[in-house]
Length: 466
Ligand code: ARG
Image (tube, rainbow, N blue to C red; front, side, top):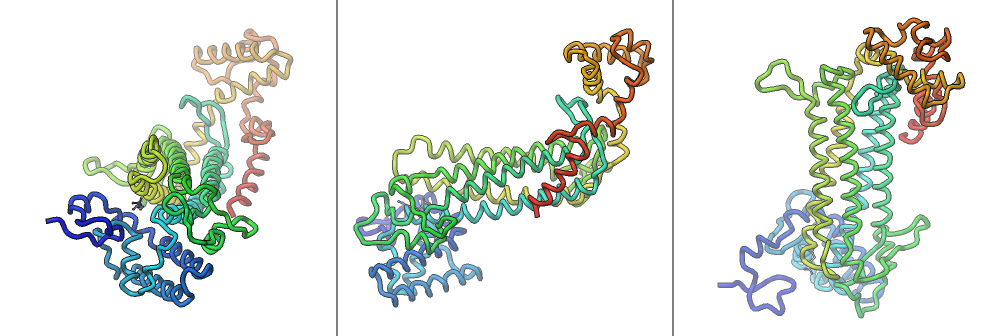
């Protein structure tokens, strides 16, 4: 027998939803985490209703007290969530109705559509700020490791082949740049989410004389000067999920960066490189091979990036092709957003922890960077300073490299007569090129791995990350 519906929307129904439908359509098991934002929204909304005279100050106070008490109950883990009430919004309203008669007026001039849009904008502002702070923590850990290994040089790679020498710190600074852009993207999400949709109603606003700016101000949807910011189109405000997608994009790109950082670290910890050692606390062993110490934190960072990309894809596909305005499909927008936030936040902390305990194997780095062939490009530059066109210089140095390889000699061990046979522009000073310190000192331009530039970057990052 169908049960009579108790739902807030039950007036036009003679029977309630099937148990299967309730199970299928509930979202409270997930969206209950929006409770603090929902309560903030309801408090601002009821304050506004009192401000414009739609409810009395007494009713507003009763609603506020009731909502505060409910929130305290939730925080204490004493609140009973009921999946039959569908979502967080209706659970809170039902609980308030039990305590406060004025609760029946709370939903005046409001729809769950502008309510959920408001809750999620508040959530996204909060989540972006929290995640930005965690990424900052990871950046600080990276800066500390770079600082502790200021004098270490390693080969930089292209095609995973040793290319040119760089400061270890310069490589880590590349990661800092990536993460800095991630923080900037999250700040953009905050800015885009900072417009209040309340007052949009279900899709067409309300006939009641509400004050949208009042509500926006009460919820902190304000510009730098404290002026309220309200969304400009009621249909867009309830249908739009752009900033969900922007947040998931920021997380997906952060994940891609994490994955590249993790991959570098995984390579560097292998016996073939052995440039760094990861802290035991972030590694695991093998159930079979007793000698194994695996870089699992990094492998999971690399793996999580797939999940973060998947969440973005879910959201893009969810919204694509939906007619304006709200459709129930949109309830599926929250799991990927929550998951992107939770996983990204965890990843940022794990990166910080892994990096904080990392040690650098200086001998291995020094041995890897000692190959004079890494300065073959500098040798071509040397010929250029002696008037040789670069293409010709490149070709000549290539021939010298081949000669060294054929004789199983290091590049700088070749006799001057032999290299002069390749190109007459080689002078007696040609081997000076292979002095690593000298080679790096010549890299004086902004963004290059010369010692003066790297020192400048240390100062820049110290300021940016303080
Ligand atoms: N639980 C719903 C969601 O998250 C809230 C909005 C419901 N609106 C509606 N018209 N049924 O999307």
